[in-house]
Amino acid sequence: MSVEEVLFELKRKVQSKLPPDVGVTGLEFEGPELVIYTDDPKKLADDGEIIRSLAKELRKRVVVRPDLKVLADPETAKIKIQEVVPKEAVLTNYYFDGETGEVQIEAEKPGLVIGRHGATLREITKLIGWTPKVVRTPPVRSATISNIKDYLRSVQNERKVILRTVGRKIHRDTASKDQWIRITTLGGCREVGRSCMLLSTPESRIIIDCGVNVGSDDSATPFLYVPEVYPLNQICLLYTSDAADDLLCVDLGGRRIIQKKILTSIIINASLSTHTLTASHLH
Image (cartoon, rainbow, N blue to C red; front, top):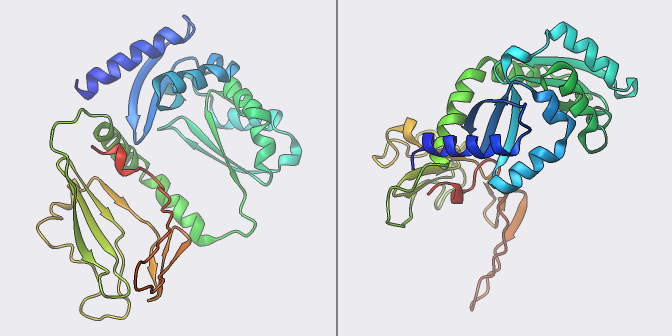
């Protein structure tokens, strides 16, 4: 079954579970999420149980976004948000993303914007159509963070293309019957820094970490020129584990793995937290 056929079947299931007067204008995979576009987000906002039951039945992370034609004007939306959110939340900034139909709301007390079990967020969606996302106002304004946010917003379209490409890879049928994994070390072995490994399967390639050996002048970066890596634009995922090496232990995801020099055995306990996608998502 192709990805288009999977989406068609999912749309049929979603439509059968929604109220008859709620239309689904589109479905798309974005990363691990199934995004549902609707022309009547207000009715879905009235009953948060509908989306929870959909996610449970479809066994997918479901995100509902409004069709762009039903969104309120940003200036009008700001006024409506201020009417709904308690003044104690102290709203400090807004960012309206017309590509996703989401509005990012900065507040000193984000919990008051969310409300009990997300009740305030649903009320905002009913009034303005936009899907609210709440972030805490930084205690100290940072030019670096502001520049990063501005950059992320400037490449929003490119990011959406990447998410949709990855999403379709996650949900595609398995083409190969073979099940094997090959690990190629591209750096970080017998040295401190430039940790980098390539994990390959019959249908995917993942780079795990891409570090730098800051103490080297001629071999600072990983061996990204080897044939197994090229072409770079066909790498499925760059996974960063935040690994650091200090000779006697390795820091993986914030937890220490202490090397116990025991003649009979070496016991290693580790926990590696997955930030974006797990390898099990990729066939």
